[in-house]
Image (cartoon, rainbow, N blue to C red):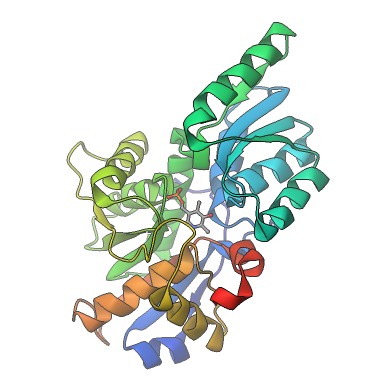
Length: 301
Ligand SMILES: *Cc1c(COP(=O)(O)O)cnc(C)c1O
């Protein structure tokens, strides 16, 4: 269970004193890869699971998604072509994300959400008809290899500290599911709290459970997936998220309004509810998101 990529585990005492917990931050935003965060662990594990890298990698996501950007960059480094099926409005912020994908030599199509599977199917079929090996990677890299990478990282973290809880921004679920598996292996009492950044709990908890099982947990493992901090939904944010983002930056902790700001807003609210206090050691598992901060409309921040 070792050999996972390492990232710093930092004590943020000043911010922790201000909010009323012992705050540790697992800095996956500082993994050695630009603008990527948790997708580095997941996509590296996924690509390493192939015996030989397929000539074409296909995946999908929102135009500004960290998954698509990271896959494009890793494909470029490793010599695989990447085609992305993207959705979302092509506004000014999206233009920056698209320019990056172009510079990375990825090809892409922008479609409506209901056309995603058809578009993936067509691109896959046309590459196969030319005899090119293709692999389709699930959106967000929601894969067993990705979940296992997070299991191994969480097992390492549990060797380093004994947290009361780990709080993580949760989307497609492999990050949280993997962390749950890594914590379960340690038999310490530590809650793994997923803060939904997009999906309502009714739809979002099941993929987390699925990923936890891929990474080896028991069937009925408890899943905590809180959907009350979505603040409008994926990519949207209001004052709760914005205030959390500003508080992080004011203490030298870079947060973003799409992912980590929501996780931190969740921590603030759980403290207000009395769920954590000064005796609690809370790990914010920082999943990245700097690009989302930089590319977001500054007026909204
Ligand atoms: C993708 C992403 C997440 C969510 O990870 P999942 O494994 O999809 O749940 C959280 N934070 C950031 C910054 C991300 O890019």
